[in-house]
Image (cartoon, rainbow, N blue to C red):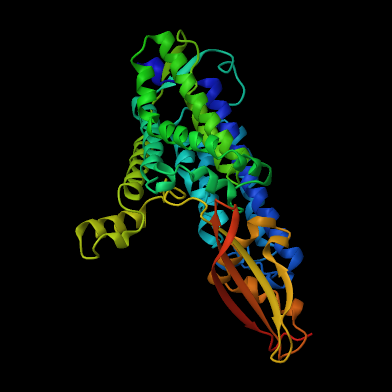
Length: 436
């Protein structure tokens, strides 16, 4: 039993390396966004050095000095976490920086970090294994019943919840969920579009993904009740299945960083030779509290409905859910489950005057940020308005002019594989005071 639940030294190290790579890639991704915005519309940024002003850390309206500093420090802290023998201590600082990045930015592309927090917290509870040393080449496995069983339960719960939230008919009836996903410009990568020519294959894969997610716990337990040799092999096969699952997501969609983090997670399940020595390690009361906090977060964000308005406001269940979600880590594992990729998005910008025909300026899809820009563009516009305001000094030539931003939400038609006009939201910005 201890050998089965034990974590191999070499795979623990590989998992830490892959997690750090995913965090560093996320930081570079966000720095790319920042410098792209700054290059195109520098007017939205300041040169403030006030470290106590939270808006100075915003990706779409912060300080040109403080925003990159935040991400560069996070990159260095991730590297220290990787190479530091006592990485539990550096883990605290890295966790604080990730919390800051996700909390201070309104752009949705930062919120994905919240999924990685619980996994990073597990490293508070795992044994202190350095990157180099005599134990790396040996078959040593580390075991603690609280930590190791929690990792198994964590895996089982998140994948079952991901399966459970897929209630839309595109998953269970038409089985066109992956087809919608690949037709979405906001999710899929261009090279993966050729897969949409094989709708029957995508239906088979949709069903296979559902079965895999629903079977996470049963597959892991099945390996447990075999003999040691078969049990280790079976657990490796389960881990390989989920690594391939996330690898396929990572290479076909914009969820590359998330997929890499989850691949890192599954490396903890890879097994060594059944004859490996099992070494017990202790955990502190604080680490046990963190494990309890992770469990509570999973319950709070997955047991209750995603939209709390489905529960009567005066009910005890609604009050309990709101209270728990206020103090726990967001861990809803059905973000794209109900209706994946039903819409494509685009922002069209026009310059208008009362007497002249409107002049088309640009589409969000032609911006330096590419197809990722449309969602970030519209989200930031509502949360900060700085992004739209930044275009005024660039395009305004007279006080009588105004800029009009059209946010197009297009419904995907899988029959013709074309977008259908669905909704258009308009935002008007007057040029008064910004004329060149």
